[in-house]
Length: 92
Image 1 (cartoon, rainbow, N blue to C red):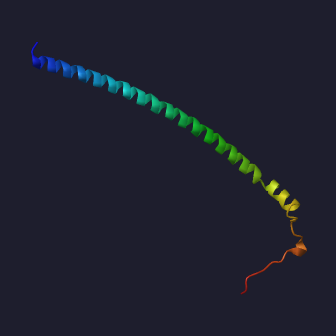
Image 2 (cartoon, rainbow, N blue to C red):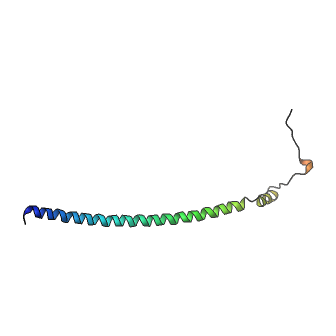
């Protein structure tokens, strides 16, 4: 074999090795990205569950019955009697 063929064979061998290394690296990067995606999805699901729990808690804390009970007990508030109501009409 002459020198040109050996050079070509060397270059082709190098190209195959580089190509194989690139395939292995691409597969590794793909798996790494997939694992990260799965972790982010699990985190999203946990946040969605927490959000639902917080919305339920908020709706429970904001019910009219609870607000009225707290207003009566802690703030000593009450519905006004008819004698305590003052109606103000705009001037004409």
